[in-house]
Length: 184
Image 1 (cartoon, helix red, strand yellow):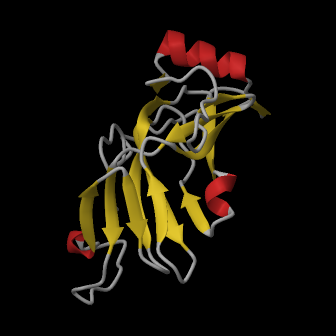
Image 2: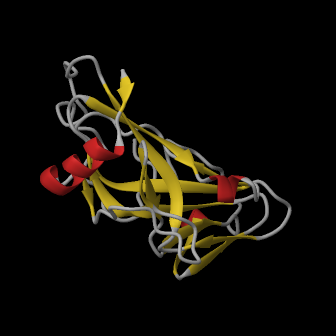
């Protein structure tokens, strides 16, 4: 398995619709950087957020998640309460090739502030907006800036195309748009 370069990412984004919209170079003009980097792509967080709240004293259950555990906000700056989290999505829509696995890592700018970004791997032939989870590990409120960099995606090419892709399995998060809550 090898990590794929900026040339490969650019070619697949522009000629095969792998990332839309695609930003061909790093942008950092007074914002948290985003766009194509040497061996990855820094995606932006959209302005749609679901901020965790426990006003109804719900139990967090991945098999029966209570949608009322979140408050929805459409904003340029999301404030996450102390020791809480928010769900968001990427601005970009991804289409992963059959012989590629994509891994996501948080941006160091957020990590150095105690804000952790979590995303599970994007499997071969998965497509959609990526749901992002921002955890505020600090005892203070934390800001997330919409339309700025949130995380970096690394593209790994397999030694051969997989036998069964996410699309073949009709995965439950296939084609998701917007912020997507847990599904069983």
